[in-house]
Image 1 (cartoon, helix red, strand yellow):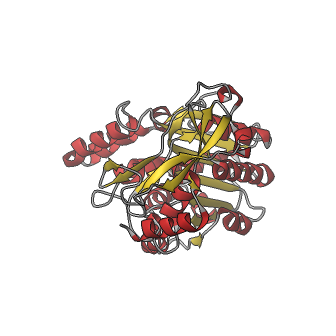
Image 2 (cartoon, helix red, strand yellow):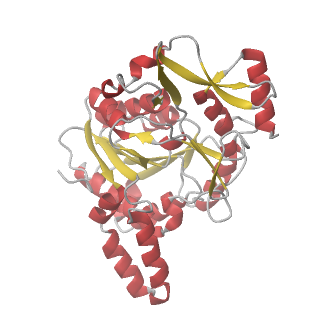
Image 3 (cartoon, one colour):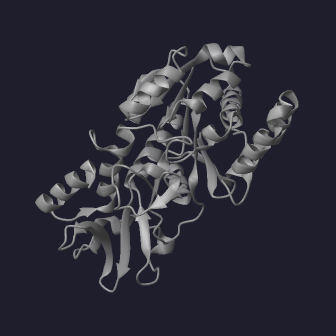
Length: 362
């Protein structure tokens, strides 16, 4: 039994069954035993690989996207660049290298990173030691530091790790799925016998879903998107969210655990496996629009990256380093292929109405 499993069992014995969202939050972010708090999960030696680790091209194109947004803002003398969940700092390092080709932007930039993990912050600080970056544990702290300065926010594979509640439609109405213990002290799913106020957050298109349907809701994601939308509306700028998920609201249990580059049972080793759920891009877009922001996308990652010039960048890299051509084109395929990251992953941008946002067709 993992240390986190032992902790959660004590909580359940003391307080009763807990929500899926709390299980997920504790498994990932418990200060002492949470998955992200204690390890570097990225790369071949970890549990999964994100797009910035697949190829330098990804981060470089994000850097050029930031430059294009800065130009659309009129080239302000100061721009705050915030990344949520920066991993190893790979995306930001590659983006800043690309941004150096725009000297006026490079000198105008203040870089802020938001990460709750001490283990990952230490890795990021080594990777970005020469950048003068600032670190924060919460988005609101980074936005407060930005003040009234135009701001660009990047969130790559961040929203999928925010906790989700699961609701199931029953004959008695929508009931929340909980995590409890069976007679043998094993984690099991059970249903709350009481109605839940979370049902008010179910998208209208899903309220009459068939009996037994599972709907996932992430109030944490909705609150965060609302905060981002209000900020870019107030100071100018844009937010870019890239993650895997669905473009339209849907039903289904997407909660999954990954360990050693394979799927495992979410109850098998809590605290030692990554837990994620698909992002509901349509609902994020709705919340941003309700704040008055313009929304671009969601757009399949392959279309977004190709619109930014991914193929051209791959061709140039392969020409400069022909010995790496096979590796470069394999990375291109992984980022864009339908059976890899190309269609499951989506991009969505939030900005002031009237702004032109690169990478998104009008």
